[in-house]
Image (cartoon, rainbow, N blue to C red; front, side, top):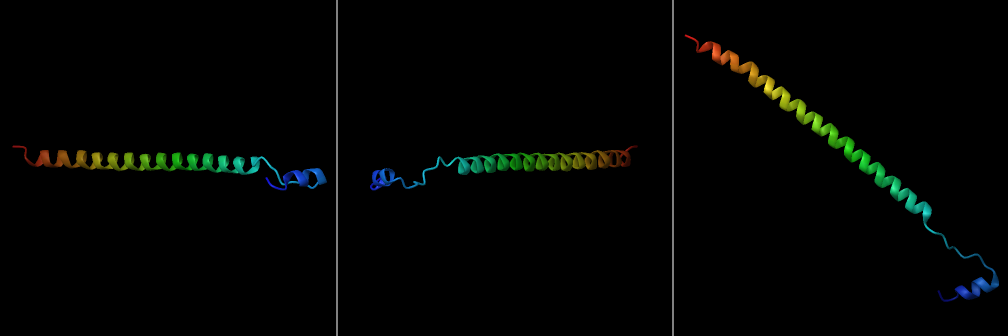
Length: 72
């Protein structure tokens, strides 16, 4: 802060901001990142569910064929 008093007394402009623009941009980025992470997680969950459903369908389709072949 050395020289601050002199600059104030002389009337020079002092670059003193609150950093509001920086913090708003940072928060917007964090919110966007959070939204993107949630969207990706939802998409991955849907893909896993679809794969599990397909696997269950394959098992269900294969089971009657095996059971029908062993009938006496």
